Image (cartoon, rainbow, N blue to C red; front, side, top):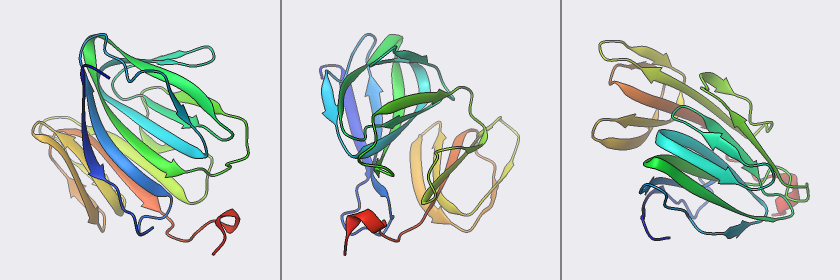
Length: 182
């Protein structure tokens, strides 16, 4: 993992954010990779903030800023992600698997805007890009804003956001899934 800087934004260990287990802001140098690694029983939602990232599993997929990738690890897989020539900045959101016994899948939502279909009822993701001088009405939830100075995470009731950059809102159901037991 040489060339990777990772900042943990959230890692609740009390289940207070429902399916959301961890959120990181990752910066990869040009050509840097995470290294081949495994996932099982987790869904990973990756939002490319800057640069380019190539997902290497199955057919592979290239991603650019604004793309949202959804990796459903299910029964397990080994994969890697590699930064492009200008490096990459990625928001990685790890969620408890919606279907832990399913076969692994990976899909990319290019230039995502508004609500992104995550195919699960306990987590919804909304995003928008705010141009300088513009403002956007955001829905209530866990606000993740990427601006010039970095990434900010806060609970909010909805409203107007005017700082330029990418804005995401997570709406999360804190109830435990039936398969998780008591």
